[in-house]
Length: 349
Image (cartoon, rainbow, N blue to C red; front, side, top):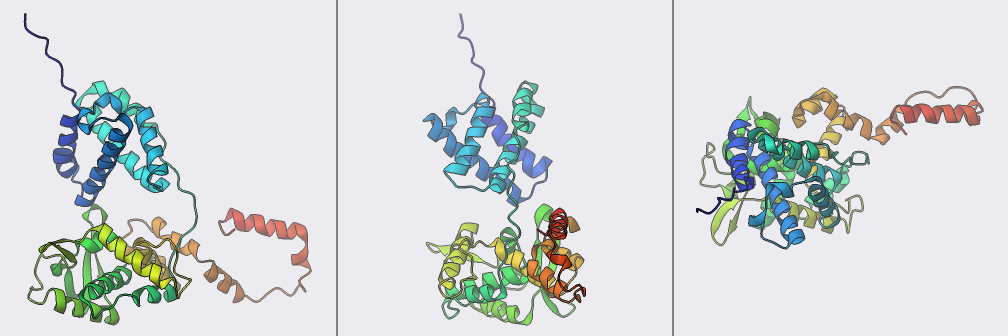
């Protein structure tokens, strides 16, 4: 009698097809989206090997149940100190994978349905955080442009702020993305969903960029597909990583905070984008212009900048002549409560 053949668990077959075929081809996801999903499963591997005490090669589909995924989310929060937003991104990636599995084999539809009902963590509304002009200047004053690495770091941060680029957008900029359109120096950025937008570069930022190009890309042509920012490790030239950029940004911010308390304790690259948008709005640009500059698909996303600046609201109130009531009406407790309720209802308090 022959031995009974054991059916092989399809987890790794689904896994390879999901990343090699489905995401890049069928879904036409960007390289950044694929990289984000890969990061999720690298973390899932770390959690599994820690929890189960076995190598990831022993992973099977039935392990991906509600208890395991909720445990993974708790691990991200407690062990890695991830925010609700980051945990939500990881959960979305897992849901997408299980949805893919269920369409290939209906046997895993109940597994997908169970995980799909796990709610995405909600981030507390702490308002928009952005840097003051003074804080921006303090951070940009830290790199030494006379040193090659200092020049690189300074130019990176200047362009991050000037263009309001996302980290992934700045890291993806090629030399051929630097153009002069209608006599204006500009960058072509590739954003989410491979949508491209063009942003102008001011004179001061252009000086930093030109100096950087002379030092780091002196022999390259403007049509080159070489990345604008790169690193050299053990003599090998490669793309700069997000970790590398975040590291030097946080380093300079920490130093700048010693002389400027307006620099936040928790600095990250995306604050350059928020700050640029807020400063554009404060300068009198309307939300449509800010939306186009940021590359937002909807004005609703950009609306956060209109609701963020209490200082602007305060200044607007000061421009309106006060009612001639002698102040007595506003001291009445009932009217004061009505005013507070009105402001709270409309998101101002």
